[in-house]
Amino acid sequence: MSTSSLTTKAITESPWAIAIGNYIQSHPVLWFSLFALMLVGSLLKLILSAVPQIDILKSKILLPLVKKYKHKKLIKSAIKSDIRGHVNKEVAKVKKFLPCGWAEDMDIDWVDTEEASTLRNDKRIIVRIRPLENQEHNFVNASYHFLHSGFFPKMQSVIPKPHYEASVLYICRKVVDGRGKTASTIFEDNFLEPSIQKFQEIPEYMDDYELMDKRGFFMGTFLRELYAIATNAKFSRARNNIPEETTKMLAHVKNFIGAYDNHLSGEKEMAPSDWWHGGSVSKYAILLVARPESTRIDPYIKRAQDRFNAGSKRLYVFGANHERKFANAVIAGIDGTINGAKLVESFETPYDYRGMPGGIGAVFEYNRSIAS
Image 1 (cartoon, one colour):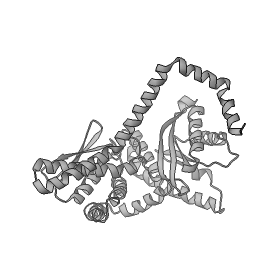
Image 2: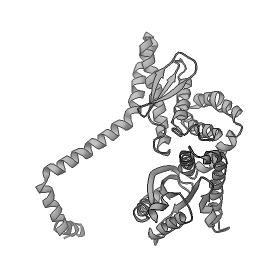
Image 3: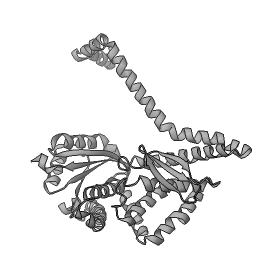
Image 4: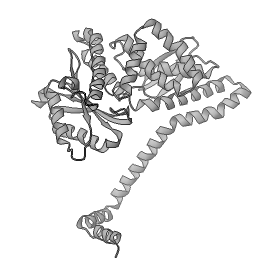
């Protein structure tokens, strides 16, 4: 008898396998219901992911008809489907990296004025644009106003204006570049350059964002922490400190990247001050998860507890894509072990902290009163 046959025989005759088999046989309706729910969930996920593609397909059908018949209602429907489908498709590529609740699905409405505007309706962002013949201009226009409305929801008046504009422009540039050269040129001439004329800091900030983004810390730490401190300081005197705090936070993340690179090259060890930032408003720490073969999750849980004991209000945990399973185990361990630590959100990063494509992250908030 072969080894595989012996293995199969041992599994099928094991007590737990027999017990599971008997349970399934005695509860067929339950298992059929669970299977049906899983199937429906999978279908819904597939349908939702295909919504932008449906819009794009609809526009491909309508646009040739528009050119021939030039029916006003048909023209609007074709343009709406084309822009909504392509914007949602491109934004979906970066949306998974953004904080939960940002840049929700977009719809299109029409106005007769030249200026575009945005509004929120039942968690959908409606972009109002003028029906122009230039679809590239429509795409850029809708993308910018969609992201402008979707960033820092309810905190837009609290966030320092240069960083608010720069962050929107940085992500919008990613979205628009996916459309092509013509769209990129329209974006640079009509949105990027006018914003730079208004806020001279934008080019420097966008360079800093690029540095952080290539290591997963721009959307992973910077945007999330800026949003958190704005939310917490909105109705207190600490609100006046947010611009200065943002500058210090930006400097800390950049210094953290430099300290990590120096550590890898053997120049110096990373000091505790490299790992955590303690300002007047923002107090957070960063924990990097790697998996040498002998490593267990316990040391990482201890390091997380040490960061909280040092004064961190939030902890950002980062792992690499190829070490996802272990990183998730550390995140679950912190969530289930440390009193007062609440998992706010798990998220993806475009790059891991080593600079390789794909990463995983999570952010915890620490309640000291619960811990004690």
